[in-house]
Image (tube, rainbow, N blue to C red):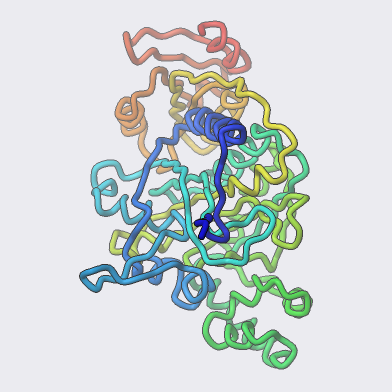
Length: 417
């Protein structure tokens, strides 16, 4: 009897590995430009981690998670996703106490018992990020802009962003109440899974792949469900994406298959994968850290399916970006912050590694943070700099400074390199 690989798994042979390495190399270079650092967590975790975070009534936990009891009778699971393990590691290793705000990226295998199809396997690989410790909508924008840059870097062209906001917990409850009221008259027309979801987890109805359920869900109006703060944040994020020239479509019925999401959520669909066309997805999860035992804190991230990217790629270009020393932008005031965020995007697009504060820190605290994370250069931007349209670049190694026009910043750093 010949032993063969399990259904839903694959062998990646030497002649195929080049595409995988290109994706990993491009990812690492772009993550470095956005000041994200790598983390690796175990493939196995306590099953309860995913029940508490992903949700006991989600398809992942109820139908797809590989779980078993070890010799000691403990419930163990192969990780079906990586956000919950990263948050667990963040808390267990006291990063919330020692670092507070962190920007992390990961690469590795995940496991779900799904029906294998184009770009979808039972053991599959993801590359993703988690930024933990900030509620700033600017961070949501950064995460989406970063994802867009990654997909372009891989060589993808025919893809589309779908974005939505679920609002805060009060807004999510309001959305659920609207769905309860509007869908009760269509219960018999929903699939059996959605009839169960109506009682256990009604938001999942919006995520159903059945065409009949999709049609019914689209007929429900959720307009006006967001509070003013959540609505204002979502409008600002759209403004920032427009400025960064990220193309997107607002999709009011978009939800994710994980319970921990709040506020901003997004998905990227690509041609060539059939009905299951999502190659990347993510969003904000402001309650997950506290749900797993930490203090309440904001967080945002995404995951990309590598197999799905490879499925739609015709050719991945060779990496051209170089790793650079980190530039940190320190700002004073709201107007300076908006201009600083714009400069940040421009520096990154030119291949430079740059970052900015997302925690509304004071000037001194921003300088301390820049020193703590090992920034090579600091740019201070305040009212005087906005008026003069010039900034001082401080070299953190020798404390020397040079004055540069804001419009010449990219050239100033590139010429130095």
